[in-house]
Image (cartoon, rainbow, N blue to C red):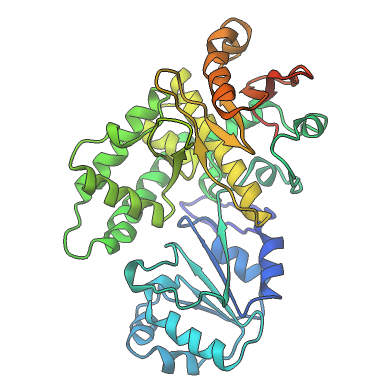
Length: 407
């Protein structure tokens, strides 16, 4: 459950079941170490403390505790009796090796619970110490069903649209509203746009100047980081997919900063399908953040970008919380417009307006048909702001689905 404390002089209490909970509880019965990573202020600590209330919370945000853990990790752990929840553990990298030693001495499932706003990787001195000892979950922003107190509806196959189409739970207007506010626990429930803007402004400054800066201890350039975000926002306002060609500056430096932003879950990298000719692109983890950076939400390009961000989050949550590997990719031909994602070998393209379905169908279908031919897929789908699906002919072709088909 999520509890939102009072902030900004606003009394807010919101409870939401998080769909990651079931997977975390399963992992706690299997692995001695259970880790949860994800975007800062995404609800990791609140969820873990609610699920494992018997595990005392030790926050590495505390300066004295952090200093002790970095200086003498083995002695620090000796003072703790598992199960224990170590919050923001990436701030004390020596603890990873120390926990490994503890686990190798006594392997008991559900002994050590870890949270982090940075990917557990070789970055920042975090080695692969816990390989084979940890079950790891990435907590994404909330889905539309989570925001609306609905249950998790697992999807076995992305192309099983006939079954999903018979049980559509939300209209497209609900997704449009949610794509503006996003799925982060606090701003998602702020009704006032100015309050959301102030929240994101403060959140982004802290994320860039504190979290991102740790990846560049000797040569951090905050102006360059904010410039990258500004260039992304320009591309998104035009409905484009931000790639390396959108950024000014040395390519190696741009990629270095983009990779660091991935590691703090600010961005998601999406590769181009091997049959396409595009390069990798990056989207923000949360649609609300994308909306804040764009500075506007009106217009076809903005609608397309907000919808694209929100649907990608739905897809990622479906895969992550079922422990299913997801290859995130889109498709781009030499001349055609991009196709937003390829799932189970089937292309899907988002259409931002009803007009695109009713009056410009041929234009919207063209890149999809090209992708279908190249991928040897008999079917492809347009996702649009429609309430009822139109399934493709039995012999194959293009179908039309609501944006909310997987929500």
